[in-house]
Structure formats: C-alpha cells, structure tokens
Image 1: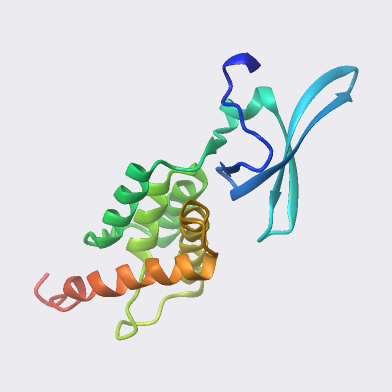
Image 2: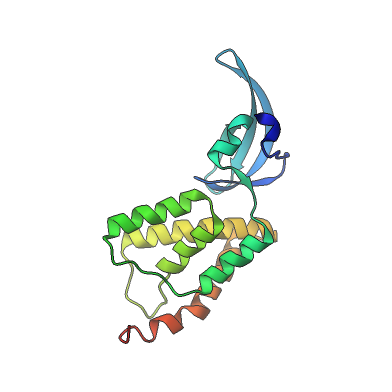
Length: 177
C-alpha cells in the first residue's frame, strides 16, 4: 500500500486537510507497538505544531502536494464570482463552511472566503462569521504563499484585493435582489 502513496521529500510543502500547509522536515522510521512505521514529520509554522503522519495513512487522510497552477487559477476565479448566501440557519451554514475548509480543497476554501467576505461599507459580520472567514482566507493565503514563494501577509493582501475589486458589483443592487 505504501508503494502507491504519493512520495513527499524532505523540504516539500504539503497540504494536510485539517491543518493547511505544512512542510516535510524529516522522514522517520519508528517502532510503535511492535510495528515498524515510516513517518513523515510535518512542521506547521503558523500553529507552531509538528505532526507525524504514517506514510501508509497519507492517502486516507487526504494529504497532498500543493495545488496545481490550474487549481490555483480556478480558486482565484472563484473569488471573483457572486457570493452565494444560503438562507439556512447559521449553525448549519457554519458546519458546511467548516467542512469545506477542512476538505483541503482549494476551490472550496475560496468559495467560503468569497461567501463570507464583507466590504467595508457593508454591515458588520458576527464574531463566528469573522472567525470562519479568517480561517478560510488564512488557509487559502498559506497555500498561495507557498506556491508563489512569498509570505502569507502578501498572499492575503492579494486575495483581499481580488475580493474588494469584484465584491462591490454584487452589493450595490442588494435592494433589487
């Protein structure tokens, strides 16, 4: 099973769905409960966290390499789209947003970022909306930063610029909708 798992090298950036972008800092071989395990040691700088992932669990967890340029382009296009605001209860929407963020799928994370973005001239967000927006935009920014070899604040600025440029056209005619 480990033979067909995607191979990551030390120094590679990887996406761990529940935590975002991390870096492989070491390959370890450890004996745990009498079994020899090969482990990827991942470092998540933002959370100051180190995670050990058995190589044979990579696929089932959904750990992957950084997105392709095509996927990144699709995610950036998603940010330019019309926000989809469902009229369901906030608790249900919040669960859906969290699931999209934790899926590790860049386009889904971009959808959450777009849907929860509020221009400065719009009503204030609730605390939990703001938290989910920041989680999604931060996750998106970290992958963008790793792909473009820049830092997270620069990537976040780029994302917010796209949102600010395209969002006003969807908020101007809200009374017509």
